[in-house]
Image (tube, helix red, strand yellow):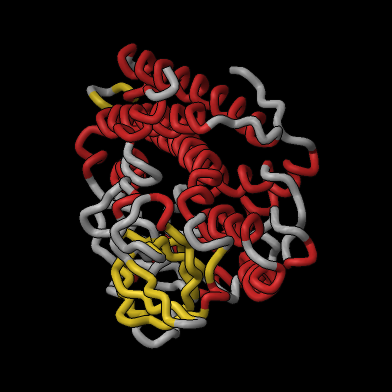
Amino acid sequence: MIPRTLFSSEHEDFRSSFRRFLEDECVPQNERWEEQQFVDRAAWQRAGELGFLCVTMPEEFGGAGVDRRYSVILMEEQGRAGLSGPGWGLHSDIVANYINSFGTREQKLKWLPPMARGEVITAIAMTEPGTGSDLQAVKTWAQDDGDDLIINGSKIFITNGYNCDMAIVVCKTGDRDGGAKSISLVMIEADRPGFSKGKPLKKMGMKGQDTCELFFENVRVPKANILGAPGMGFAMLMKELAWERLQIAIGAVCGIEYVLKTTIDYVKQRQVFGRAVASYQNTRFKLAEMKTEGQIAQVYVDRCIELMLENKLSPAAAAAAKYWCSDVQGRIVDECVQLHGGYGFMMDYPIARAYCDSRAQRIYGGTNEIMKELISRTL
């Protein structure tokens, strides 16, 4: 198969270190994390201690100042380990990016160092009940009150929500019925009066991820907590969305690799009519098809990564990567379940958990239908 050329020996040394951390300290905890529906804070702090959080942030703000290939490695290895619980990618490569790109020096100094240490866990709160992928329709409102904002509203399906110490909240400022020009991003500390959290949501998959609802009832925050400028929230969201959607594509390709490895191991051992399942032509052909599709997806994603590193990745290309790779992942996971037979339906087997975990890939980050709409606008 086609060799990859993205990574240097230094990148691969970093990969080996992170892989050992996952294998030794995270995989053994995964079942317990899924049962309790969140990842222990100790794991966040350990990841920070070892330098695996916020790695692309400048050194003066607690990061390692490295390029985003290191972030790609973190996402890839987490996916290859079958760990859907830790929300480190969102924390390090979405929330931290917003603060670093648009925050004041004071905001960066306040939040980024403890985020890199794993002492502060963060979320970004976009989706609301009834709005789905339409961010311009959000109803959460930040009412002007002198030097403060008073925030009312709610959010749903928020990754890291239950554990979060701070959330960047998408809300309306000024005209509460306005469109994109009324949207702002406001950093809200979880210990502020009126900020409350629901219990972790009972999801079909990604059970170790502490996804929950957030509620804001007359939450008072200083205007100094606005990220960037009032009314610039939508523009800031659009600027970062290409990278965020590429992250989903990266996760999809790694998810494909994980289920293929799991399935190949299984069919070599499983006997049917006195023969290994792997010895049947149908099995071999199915595996060949899936390996080829996964490789094609990898090549496209790697090219998108190269463009991202050059600041040339277009929103349409990222949308294409997100929708196509997550669609391919869905088909491949389904085929792998079929090759497991009845055991593929048992949650004791990794393939069943992967089947449930992967379904959300086609929904979050903007549904795949929205991705097609965005691509179609460029035609």
